[in-house]
Image (cartoon, rainbow, N blue to C red; front, side):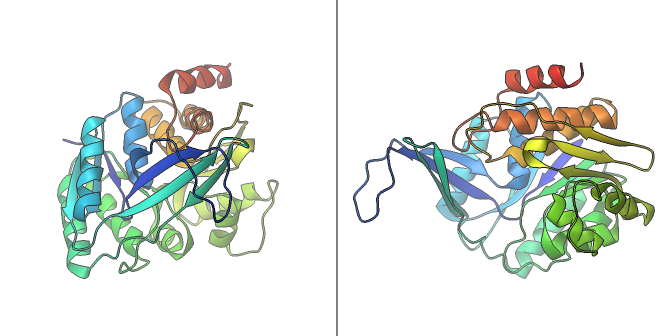
Amino acid sequence: MTKIITLTLSPTIDKSTFVDQLIPEKKLSCEPPKFEAGGGGINVSKALKKLGTDSLALFPAGGMPGKLLQSLLEKENVDYHAIETRDPTRENFIVVESSTNQQFRFGMPGTLLYPNEETLILKKLKQLAAGSEYIVASGSVPPGIKADIFARVARVAKKAGARFIVDTSGEALNEAVDEGVFLVKPNLGELSNLHGKGVLSNESADDAARDLIEKAKCEVVVVSMGAQGAYLVTRDQTMHVQAPVVKKLSTVGAGDSMVAGMVHALSQGKTMAEAVQMGVACGTAATMNAGTELFKKADAEKLFRWLIK
């Protein structure tokens, strides 16, 4: 029985490299590329594995990139179930300019999913959801999929008695929250869109988050505030978790690492406050690594100990 299921509708192969300087119209010498399995839910599963918590990653995969994606997860001992697709899995490209440490991220469009492929994904999710404790959907919605996809996932989670955590944006997030979820992790812009009442500030985020909870759209709101950490809001609690100050090398995977930290802590019976502290620790630790690498467990645990002092 799988306690934690992650869902990624738009997975990717992340290819990263370093170059001394980006110069237009010049042939540039790059360092050997690094290939990593990527996409929201997949990153959450990889991060959970680093923390010693097992999960099962569900995602579509097609073509040679899809086979490489699965091979990379096998090397990291991440359990998964791939739904074969007609079109090949997308590939993203990240270049770090060594001379400035600036990062350039080239994100390719999501792979088109066909109706029968969407049906297979939801059918498999329903099978896996029985007896699960958490279903985590993270990442964007690819072409071919309607915006209500995560609302339908929310209904699957409710029927299975699982807590549904969603980390996406736009109409897909709105639809999911309207259906009702356990936890959302919006930034201020996404929370403003959910609330529908204009631009929010740090000060007004509390009221907006509490309004969502009082309307029974979610039980927990964790507002992601980047370098400022995160703001936890539940029916009975508000809490700001300040992010530790570290040398930032990359922000790739920081949000997914934060989600993984929270799910890991909750699955271990920790309080919601401790879960957010672990989430901020993991998200911050992820920024300490260059390229597409997620956090190091030792860094995350050290930052968590600092936060709970």
